Image 1 (cartoon, rainbow, N blue to C red):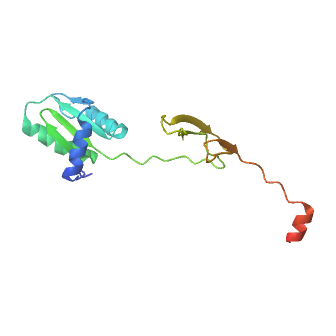
Image 2: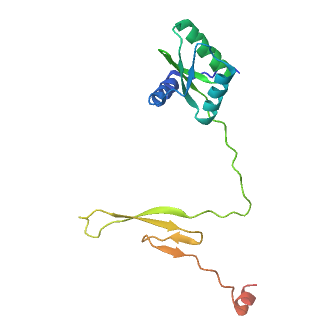
Image 3: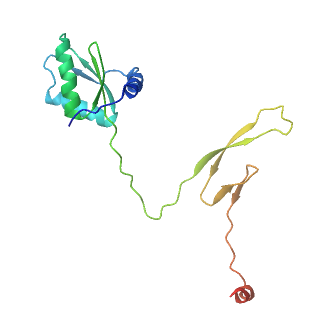
Amino acid sequence: MPALLLSPAQRKQKRAEAHHLDPVVAIGHDGATPAVRHEIEAALDAHGLVKVRVFSDDRAAREALLADLSDSFGAAPIQHIGKLLVFWRPPAPKEKAEKEGRMPGPKVVKVLKFSKSGNHRPQVKKVTVVGNMRLAAGGTLKRATRRRPASIKKSAQQG
């Protein structure tokens, strides 16, 4: 796979995101062994943005390693500073399992109630809204009522 190409602005953003990361994989004097490549692949799958430490004093070898790894993993080379290499690969889309006939779960909603005088802080109240409830204008919860079937007379008049 060829390496991803990012714009300078995108690379700058990814460098900023990678700043606080610690190196996940360390490459020793044996180079990029299959075990090391497997660990980098797993880290890219899990995190997307990976920092790798290379214990080599040869700068040209580290640059060649950066190009080789980014090509083989289909990742974008973000940064090569000192003995640290940073790679980024977009996360794979996760398949969401849809369950037939499933209703939405409870939601936690924040309700703000402002004071009448305006001198006090608004009160923040967390309310759990369950399936058949709705939030009314005053911040109160109302349950949905079942519609009663129309009487026989009314249904005969409408039809």
